[in-house]
Structures are given as structure tokens and as C-alpha cells.
Amino acid sequence: MPLAVLIILAALTFWLNQFVQLSPGRADGNKRHDPDLIVENFTAQALGETGEVQYTVKAARLAHFPDDDSSTMETVVFTALHPSLPPVVAIAPRGRLLAGVDEVIMEGGVLVTSEKSEKLPPLKLAAPSINIFPDKNLVRASEGVRVDGLTSQITAKKMELNSLTRRVVLERGRITYQQPPRKTP
Image (tube, rainbow, N blue to C red; front, side):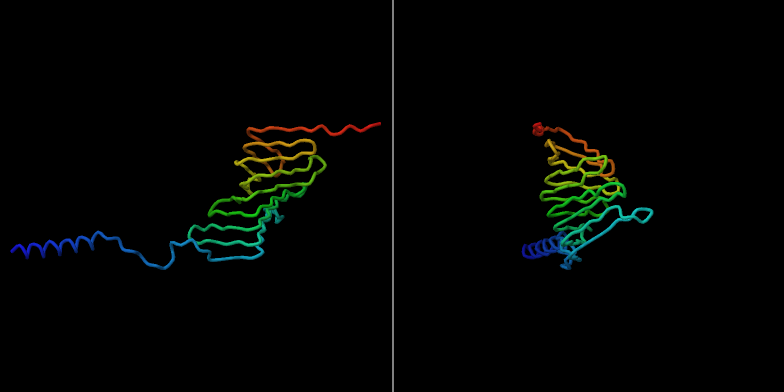
């Protein structure tokens, strides 16, 4: 009798163990973060309603990941274009595109430049990383930024740049001004 109870108890324990064990799932790689597409010398353009190019994104290499629909880029150049203004160009060693978001993230030390125009001085700013929102014509830096002018240097904790108006809004900034040398008569 005690042996029968022990066998029944062992059988119930085995059955209960099988019932509560999670199935290991299929080993088909669907949980891995592997690229499904790699493009060398990647170039993309966004067109406006009238067919003009609004911006371009170029990368030496782009890798797309299907598990989260994201992409990574190497040696990235983003150029915002406007017919009456010089282009705004951002260059970085790395970049990312996130799924379903109109945003380009550039990282690894970013340089943003624009030539001078009739109404605007040249623009040169550097940041560890920036977030570009092309459809809103906005560039944001939240890890610090340095803006170099002809006679000044501005450092700030955060920055927002409108690529159409060229208006720069800085938060917690500091300006270093160097007076230009005087011309002797």
C-alpha cells in the first residue's frame, strides 16, 4: 500500500511538472536582432508636394532590423534643403531610424553647418548627438551643444534649431565673446 501511494505521488509530480513547464518555443530566430537588409552607399530623398527635394539622408552603410523595424547607419550625412536658403548639413559617424517615427538620430559627435546667406550668418554647431525631425524642420540636441560664431562661442545644455528660419533656441547657455582685432589706420 505505501508503495502504491508513492508511485501515484511520483506520477502526479511528473504530470504536474510537465503541465507547468513553459514550452521552449521554436528556435527559428524570430527573437534575434539580426539585419534582414544591408545597403551600402544608401541614399534617400524626401520630396515636397510640388516635387522639390526637401531633404536627403546618405549613409555609407544602412542595416535594417525586422524585429523592431529599426535601422542603423554608418557615416551619415543629412541635408535639409530650401529653395531660397543655403542647405543645412549634419554629419555624424552613426545614426538610427526608428520604426514609425519621423526622426533621424545622429550620434558619435555631430557637426551641423550652413553657409552664410544674404540675411543670415554662417552656422556651425557641434553636439554629441542630435535628433532631427525633418517634417517639422527641427533639430534638437539634449546632451550639450557648441555653436561657433565669427567672434563668439556659445555652449548650452540643450538646443533647438529650425532649419527654415535658422532660429536657434538655447537652454542653459554660456557665451564667450572675443573682440575682433582693431584695424590700425
